[in-house]
Structure formats: structure tokens, C-alpha cells
Length: 393
Image 1: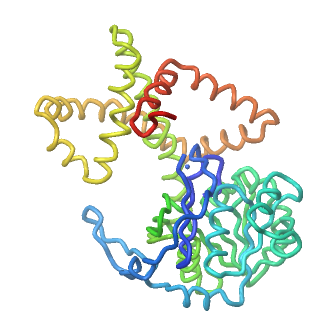
Image 2 (image 1 turned 180 degrees about the vertical axis):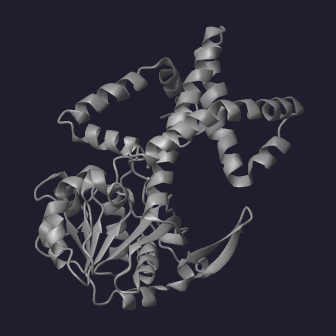
Image 3 (image 1 turned 120 degrees about the vertical axis):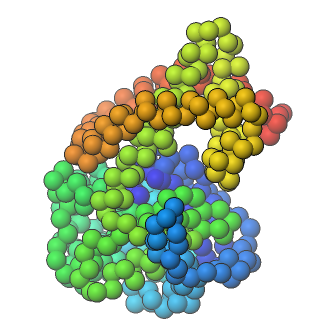
């Protein structure tokens, strides 16, 4: 999920005193920060490693870990700063509460008396003290953290830009606005650092999450140091480097591909073929969605694909190994077409155009209702209710 229409859910606090969790629903990952959990007494134990070079499949990459920025160092780094978070959606809410828990000086900027304003008050932000209009917060911030939606970043840039003055830092959690500047008109002035930290996962019980960092403009000579410190401040366990362009390309590509679009299409296709051949809805759903999401995918995530092949029956093993190349060949043209549409801006333009429609929420609900009413997902509702953890609910 960046502050975006399709968001990668952001994690909650890495403060030594508190652990928070955000459920992942990321761009449709649309979680809201949830309740405080147990006291995290293991913070110092978790911070076991620092900056290092790691081998990722034969390529060396530098990884920055939060042990390099212990809490006193983090607070010292930002002691004279005001971190102005613009927007209070999943990204704005999670990141601001993390930084607040870490003892940093944070203010929120949202539309007065709107839904986000009211939610911020519920979370303890105080109007006139830590809660302001977008313009007031941007004026106060030495760091302007633009966590508005992609469309709002475009629509409100003219209001924000006057406050992006020399010596300040402009921060994003998505490379969208900068990369697609021809569509958004977001062009930062010279004399400001422009940095990115994009959370890529889920923060639970002090584990931290992985985030990517990028530098678009380094006016101060310290932009990378700022990005690393902010990455830790918002809840990251470790950070890896990218560019604004690569962040948004991989993000849009992944969301439309394996993370949601492709897998949803595969689910539908397999389920339909099973139903066409006389299999019951329960059997088709279990063999398509339930076994994949509840059993196999978690094991693949934990152990890798080779482990999965090695730990299933020979019948399943041979079938999967023999058919995998066919699915690879069939899907490659679609993935190449998708990536090209991300690079040429088609996907960005469509997202902005759709989000700008006055009836977008209503038309989206029509689309979601159609999905909700498909037999596969109606069958799934019944199957989920039969899971042991849901018994008696």
C-alpha cells in the first residue's frame, strides 16, 4: 500500500513503550489503525542489527535497520523540527501516531470539520494545538509530509506549494505525484529536500515493517539521513533504497498484478471451470481460494516455493511443476502489457480520472456489489464461517 487510492497499509508505532497493529485489508488495502496492544518490553532486543549489505538473489543491496537509529538518537535528530502530516487516511493516521508515540513533534493538516478532522480529534489531536487546516499545518512544518491521496495531491498542490520554502523537507510515501508530474503538476521548488519512505507491509507487536526510501532532490546534502530517520520514526524495521519512479512503477504494477488484479482473475477462472464441470460451489471455492489463502500461500511466504514443492504429494508436485511453465508463458504477455501501461502513464491517468468523478464512490460501490454478489464470493462467505476460529460466531 503510500498515501494513495489503493494503499499499502501502514503500520503503527515502533515506540519502546507501545506496540500497535494495523490490519491489512494496500491501494485496496484500506486499513485503519486499530487499538493499542501490549507493552513492548522487547524493543531493545529487536534492535539487533544496523546498516548492512545483503545478497538478494545474487545482487548486493544496502539495508538500513532501525538499530542504527535508537530512540534517543531519533528524538535528537528531530528535536528542532515540526513534522506536518497532511492527510489522515491510512497512511497519515498510522505514520503520525507512530511518530507521536516516538516523542516527535507532530501536527496534522486536514480539511476542517471533515471526516478526517473528526477522526483525528477522536485519536487525541487537538484543534489549534496539534490539528490544523492543511495550509496552517504546511506553514508550521519544517517537514511537510504529503500523505494525501494521489488525486488530492494533484488538486491541492497549488495550496500547499507556497509553504514548501527553502530549507524545508517535502516528504511522500508514494512516488506517484512526482513521477507523473505531467498529470499532477507537482513540481517541487529548488532549495528543498524531497524524500520518500514507502511502507510495504504490516507492523505488529514490535516487529516493524519493511519500507523503501528514495531521494528526488537533495538540497541540504542530508536528504538520505532524513529519509532513514523518518523511516524509523514512522515504524519501519528495515529500509531499502529505490527511486521515486521505481517505487511507483513497482507499486502500481504489483497491485494490478499478483497482489490483487491477477490473483482475483485466476480465482474467478479456476472456480468457473470447476463449476462448469459439475463441482459444487463449496468444493470449487475450497480448491481455489480457501486452500490457497489459508494453507499454501502462508507456507510459501514462510519457506519458499521450492519447499512447497518438496513438501506435497508426488502427484501434486509433478502436476504443479509441469503446469507452472504454461501459466508463466500465458501470463507474461499480460504482465508486459501491464508494465508498459504503468510506464506510459495510462494507469495513472485512469486512476486520477476515475477518482475525480463526482459519483466515483457510488460507481465503485456498484462494482464492489457485483463482485460481492458473484457465486464464488457468496460461497466463500459460507466457507469462512465454517473455519474453526469462527465457530459459534
